[in-house]
Length: 250
Ligand code: PGA
Image (cartoon, rainbow, N blue to C red; front, side):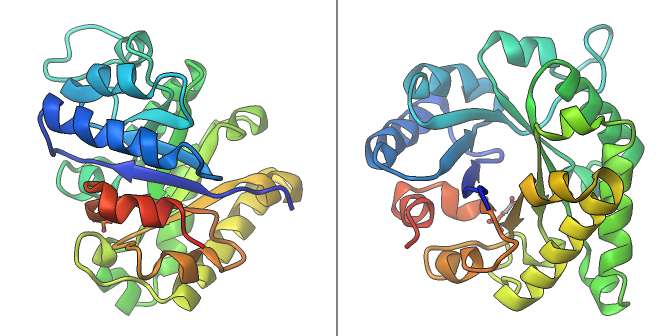
């Protein structure tokens, strides 16, 4: 299996330009000999600053969202054209904070996914259940709906630019991580769902990241699971001291 690990840092709404630049520079130095695929996603206002620092390195440049339209009267939104212009390569879409705090549904997320793919971006599509959905035995139903809804109309060729991030909402920013076994069960289900939609070959190739309180202490045991191919890291990505050991897990 030629899958590789993909470790991404989602900086959310943290840091000024100077702070982002400092973190990016440290990561460039410390991940230079890293063996995996890396990404950082700063706030919109800091993307250009970080871009200048990571350009030409082994760290990709991500954005945390984009508008569902290319341009026009959309106050407060940021377009894929603008993100492309400043060198963004990857867009995180469907993050649980977008879904739950900002009420983004699968239809809206799907519009963004298709637009980003059309413009050649890699997309990290986040999915994951709420605690009450897990307790009601609905994990698979929720994940399947979010995958099918998010990828509706995405072609097999475009799927090559899609990464799925499974992030159980109850584990995000709470310090509570899914056990490697619980995460693996869902990752395996995600891969089966991709197989049903796009065939076995596509399913075997797709990268499925785990997210939700990933830390230096639990990264290796999560990555040891057969269907976990990387991590989407929030809190622990804000400091090189915690992100680097995750990115270089052994
Ligand atoms: P966390 O966030 O690592 O702070 O739990 C993960 C995420 O929101 O992607």
